[in-house]
Length: 433
Image (cartoon, rainbow, N blue to C red; front, side, top):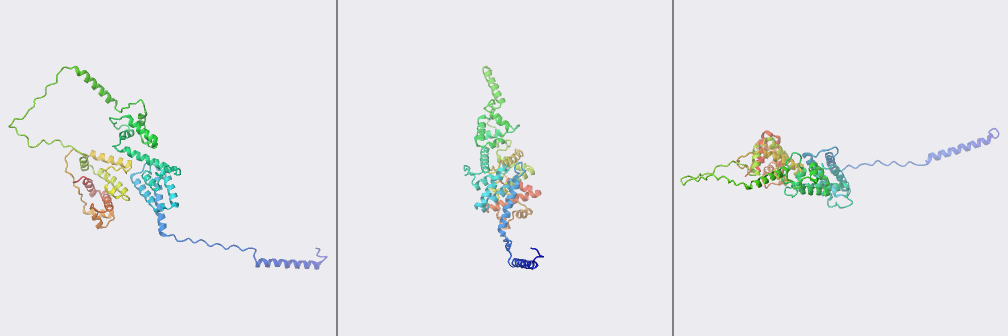
């Protein structure tokens, strides 16, 4: 539109435009095109139940402790104290009632199977307990069982087989020992190859993981078809051959043996001795050897024996206090690992080497705790005076007896000046009358 040609029309048009724009702004201010959605309130976290929080903290502590003991970077076997710690943490986890919940048990089973299988042989003390908790042995033919759980079941079978052959009464025990014999150790007189080959066949067909624990030279000797099969050393065969030849060629000798010396018989006036001559005193039984060894062993050996017994007692205390009380270095316990039993045999061997050929009185079945140590033992046991005094009675609760036996050894080890004599009396009292 030309403004100069029609100024009135232009003014009218402009007024209309201004009115239209004013209406749009009024509507926009009055009714916005959209309203923003109200912000949702921040979720308010409920205060956690203190009992539940404490439960998960405890479970987490056991999980972290077990993980640190088994993984990562550990190459050597567990020390005795680590074995006790692994057993305690593992049993605490497996005994928890949360495993009865399906959602929790499934994840726990996977975690246990993975960490135990990855840390063999360090996880050996816990394998049987975990397998019993999750039923792995009963489900070993189930195709849904994980590869880690199957590896654990195979390891348990191998360990049980090894414990069976460790029994001196087993017919393959000597063959088992020969396959483990190191260079320099004496060879058995009768050592046939057949039983050794039978042991190797069983291991290779059922428990191949055990072959790595055998001595390679002994395995090679058993596999060698050209080596001697009867297991008698060559020098024995040669000696028997030479002896046989000498007997054969001496058969034509006409010489008579010399006459026997005259026998002197006392006359009727001779008086028989009233007492028989005293023979040389010898140690006649294992008990005599143990008593003599405990009498003459150095204090350091008595303390080593006590530390071993204390380790075993602490292991059994949480779940088998009766076995805790009965534990001792002179008792073979098939439940203990081969490492612990090997240490036990070493200690007994050192003790026997301290024995002397002498006549000893039977030791007393009692031992004396001096007054200054009584309070320390009771404090270590955590028992009140009445329960502590009653715990030395055989009719006392077995749990209290276990606590006192542990506390007694701990206190004596911590106070060698007074404790060494007590520890020796404690060991001798087991053979007392």
